[in-house]
Image 1 (cartoon, rainbow, N blue to C red):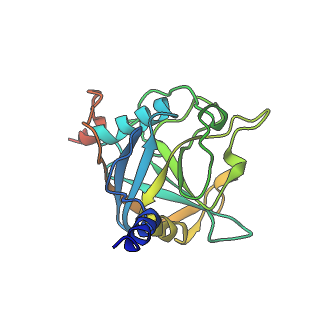
Image 2: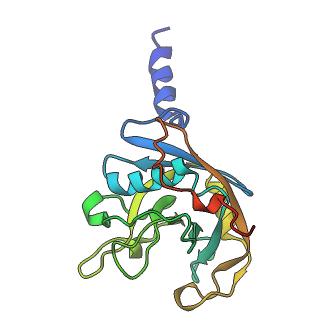
Length: 213
């Protein structure tokens, strides 16, 4: 029996972490898509403002019924890149912008399976659009003279779904998005938090109203 104890300890240490168990400081969200589910763990400790913004969209249901619309594949390695989804330019779903939490501030780098906020030219323009990386993308990290993007968590389950989305046929688009728009966007059916209590903003859900008469 004594000889078995070290072996049992070794096997326990080598066992993969159970993704069904929440980790302190992280909030898990399940994004249900037409290609399968994706579970992300948001780092509320190191990126509190970005996590709070994303959860506001989740808890209000603002991502429900949106799509993954962009597949940006690396030209040198088409199996790497990032996928982008969210509300696009739907003003009915948008919440107020918030200050950019750079990777230099949070320490969260753009590695394989990182979730990060998309934004416009202004550093503080992130809102209801996000992207997930496939492979490391250090060019999105902050550096002198460049603010980069706000990474705020990572995929803990469903990376196969992310890769399926990245492989979708794409085209169209302008400027930085040229050739990257998914021809048949992947539906985001729902996004629900798996940890903690939902905290809806109470803001009007204008996209649910039909003003067409």
